[in-house]
Length: 319
Image (cartoon, rainbow, N blue to C red; front, side):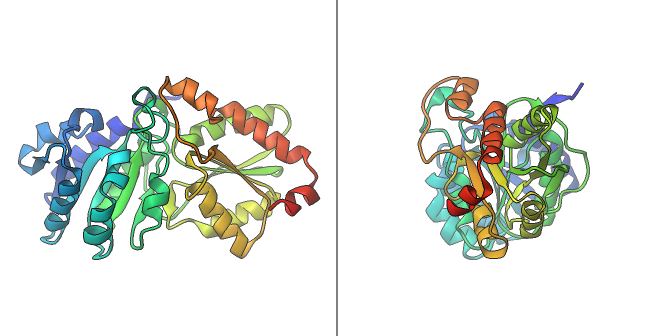
């Protein structure tokens, strides 16, 4: 049986371990420590924890200042606040000078369902991916989150990492994480599915369902949205000639856009993007929202079948 774990909880605990190893790590929080799990760090290493209150813009400025003296600051808040509320500060005092600031966003995509669209970050990848010098990471499970955390500490430069909160199957192997590299989860011949973040878990379930029906899925997990693993995407597209992307984010500016940008330049291929269809979410339970907006495993299955059932000439004409 696959272990269930919260990637966000794993992040909070791993940050303590790495903070004990590296005395340059400091954590800044915007009055959400229990929710974002940096309360573990606050309890274990209080002298390097700074509670700034509901002042996210100021938090980014403080983090930038700390980075200039050789520290490795982590800022912690909800993904919607970590990106759009503080965009000017990230752009001017973090990205432009390429400071060593790590920005971690929790409660992402549709998952903070009951607090509604104001808190659902469906544009965070697009916003930060557009800024020069920024690295964007979206791990799928607890194992990958821990490995990615170590990698971004070793990397000198600004990083945005979105970390899922909900319990999820912990299926990625423990070990190293290489920024800019993807992971091939299934080798197939019929259709390529490219996914990121929590949607990779859904894509894996969909691939298993399709396999039971005789459809072979080539499944590529892309945890780094920037820099994107262009070589792996091109190779996966070339293998099957059809690509379906899946993300818990707006289809504009996220994984689907990154894949389309890559393939349009290097290997034109029919692509269908599955994600938030350029619409905001609403208030509701997490699962019912994922169902309503077409982000469940069965929606990946249906989209893959639809692509496979349409003539290749039609798909090529509609690229």
